[in-house]
Image (cartoon, rainbow, N blue to C red):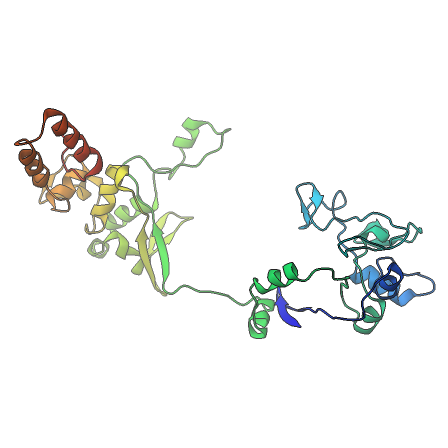
Length: 342
């Protein structure tokens, strides 16, 4: 017997070995896939209608989880069968007579084709969904449920009461950044571009608002961009940084690939620059305005110089052919971190 909790509810898969059911009549004595008679067996009819009806799915409910690729993954509705048939592999096609019995389930009229196989005695005893099948093969079924994840009763209760399953402490503020006038602007195909560009606050981003805060507050200039969320809170709706009054949060810059050019070097500078008032301040080193962010990184010694590549070419020129020298030169440019390709 294997017990597990499915979606936080008690759930069991049980394999019972009984006297072999050799004939269709034997199967019908234990398993039914039809609606009980509403007049002579009203209690069983009510339980089956409430707990043992699949779906309905298909046209009645195309959004049902079992409805995949235009058909029911559980193969409902089944075909009508005048009697139970057992194939050569031992699988049973249960009796589902077209006897006119029907019920209304989830505002849909259903018949015997939608009934999940059950045992009447078990339903009357437990008044619960209990699917009973004639088992022809167990190997795949056992592997399927042994490979799944079982959760304990305390975790099931935790999920039922919808408590938080995980938490992150301290919380992290993802910090966006961009090159001058290259901020992200979201608009639809129907929007007029001049109107979009003239919208108030279109040029204000988390990144530019950080520099605006540096202009306005002297103490804000003491912090690097990644340190800013520790003392300030970003209010997205108002597009402003406000002083933090409670809680703790750390900042993390979005990643930039080395191949992204100036954006990569801007990110490198943001990890060391404190309190810039503008983009020009970020690329200013020792009072000198560098022509671009890469030059600023080079002036700060953040990039290796190209002396090793010069020496490699100088050494190779002694013995290498012109073809080999050209090949080495191109390999250095394409595969190595060259500061000044020109």
